[in-house]
Length: 283
Image (cartoon, rainbow, N blue to C red; front, side, top):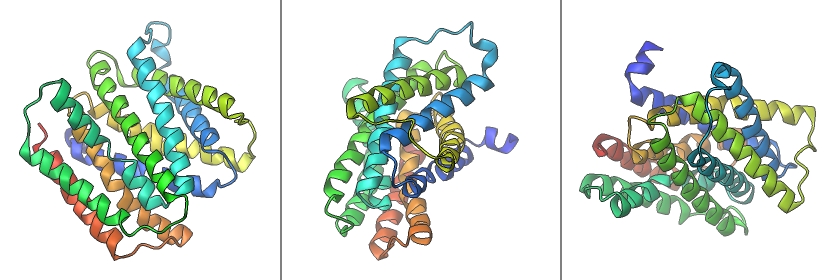
């Protein structure tokens, strides 16, 4: 633990491994709606975070910024899980993790941040890797729509990270994440009502997967992101999950026999190089 606390990048790698597992779980739950899976992931994660930080339940009052971030986190998961159902895991994972494109654009346009050629070069390589992978896609007729949803979910995550960086300056990790997840779950419940989806219709085995999603990708993976976004730039934190498609694609090959061709490895390698450049130069 001491090693992880001193090495922020080791923590980011742990977070990457944790969040990469979420797309596989969606494949194991083909009969459930994306909204149902996302709702229970957020609800259970919120309960876990409340249990950990129970001592401050009566003393901390969430603000409107946490509400805003929670709403966009709910949209993020609903869009991402639906994307996984419509396209390949490789494509959904890659396009669902291009949030640094949006965070960097925001920083340059609205925060008057100095234009970094190296960071932009890293972003270019990351997107080139995405294009290399997607140009060879032939997963299904619904892939295009699924890919659009994945891009939208990245935009939603960018909002979460940008707002989170501001909030985390003065709010503790679990005080932040417990309400973040709670508001995300509330948002997803409203979405389910609009879709006429019964989020309480699932099996006992399904619930086990919900617990896994809440504990590993969320409580471990996402909480590490929210922990580090206080001291690292939103673009750096957002860039790390760009490595997720490589891990997710390899896992999908062994678990679901989804093909991982040479263009997946080529595109994934280019993407990882871009991520490394961003992390090294985005101060």
